[in-house]
Image (cartoon, rainbow, N blue to C red; front, side):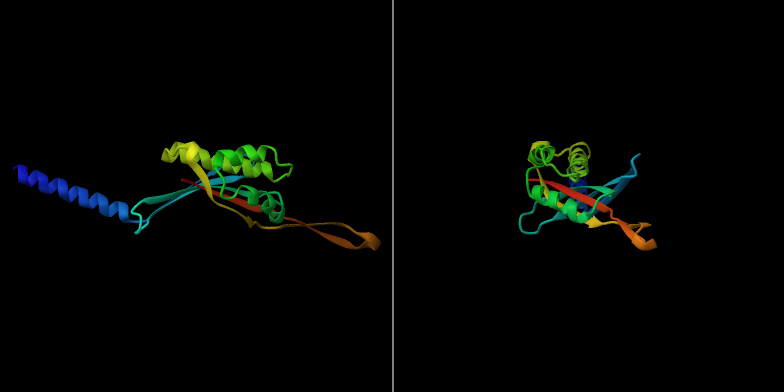
Length: 164
């Protein structure tokens, strides 16, 4: 009897190890009231050399009404820094892109803390990038009765945090 129980325990452990070795990706999207969709994506990969799991938790802010070129100036300041230090740094950056980037960063920190129980103090910004979003094409009256094209550019903010 004892031998059968030990065999079953070993089989269960082997199945758990096999499930952990598989790559897992999940995505959840929540629509916010101010037309900003935030989503969370988790990548879990096994690194064969170190035998440790590497996790990155993402937060996205979509359709931000601002040029991607202007937002990239701010995102370059925080890439690779400690997450809590980056939040503090963004409070004092005198650019309009700082506020939506700070909101996305706070969302990523909260996702990591609440959903995956990461320690807030040990989080670093593993990935941070800005993508172009669809452009709204508008126009206004120009000189001599002509039509002037106005391109209202938008961007998507993606921030990924990981433990040190």
